[in-house]
Amino acid sequence: MTRMFIVFGLALPMMTMCRTANHAPWPKQVDFLFAGLVANQEPGAAVLVVKDGRPVFEHGYGVTDLRTRRPVDTRTNFRLASVTKQFTAAAVMLLVRDGNLRYDDSLTDIFPGFPEYGRAIAIRHLLNHTSGLPDYEDLMPPPDPALPVEQVQIHDSEVLELLKGQKAGKFEPGTRWAYSNSGYVLLGLVVERVSGRPFAEFLRNRIFVPLKMAGTLAYERGKNDVENRAYGHTKEGGHWTETDQSPTSATLGDGGVYSSLSDLLKWDEALCRHSLLSESEMRPALTPVDVPEGPPTEPDGTAAEYGFGWFLNPWKGHARMWHYGETAGFRTAIQRFVDDGLTVIVLCNRADLDARTLALRVADLHLANGK
Image (cartoon, rainbow, N blue to C red; front, side, top):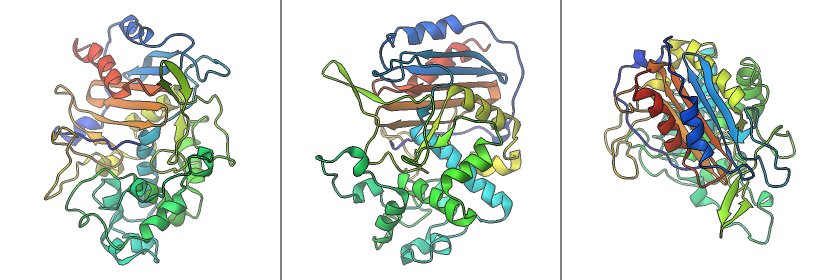
């Protein structure tokens, strides 16, 4: 999972409405863009464009893997990587709505054995990346290269133990912003502890089943299977190599969900219609965090802002909520221009494509024309 960073500046009400309008037929332009990037027998991509609540373009390119060479289609399930964080945030928000959790509850409230430094870390700090938690990737022991990657993967409970072994965070919670996969792993464990259900089960019962996202799941090796699965790939020395897993691929809350275009269309509809969380319940997720020092910045130093599981910034003057993800062999992005009734989703099972930039190029085909 990468650390991802951004900017927001338009009023919240503009981010929560779905409009209806006429649109121009531009699928051929989108198809031309992706057809030139992915050969038929290569690892590929899936692209969805939703305008005013209905899909106007949905297409798969390339294959799910080089063993079966099964074509990518709208039901192909990709590892979402950090796009998972919006589902983790939604799970926490459901518990808050239920009255079982508060955004101001601390880590020591949830995990009594957590060290004293967790007393100042609230749930909202985990959600908006202001917790100051150390990065679990930096605390992991070096993996044994002689072992299969699945045998050296870290799991959520092990992340918790690593963090419990620390005496302090990187900074005082709420004072700075630093993208934290550690925080979202802990949020998955918070959901599990508060609900009394495994995190993957909570996601399934409270989000995926109600929204009829039948193929979507938080993948746990040996416990469930991903149907219509795409496998990640990297091009090395001119040849494709399957690079589907890494030592951090088994954690759930920060990046463990698999989904498809057909299911993400239902997720987009739920966000648009507020059928899972009401507009007022979603408001905290769409409110940029404000910190007194070290505010969010992109790698180049550009000012950035974040809500709960969503980056928030206008793109060329268009209000936007978005996220993207990167992990071994996968690149993903969702761009929602809710004021324009436009959503673009790009899922790739290859590491050489920039899903975020491609999604914005697709969006520009619409936004530049104001259609």
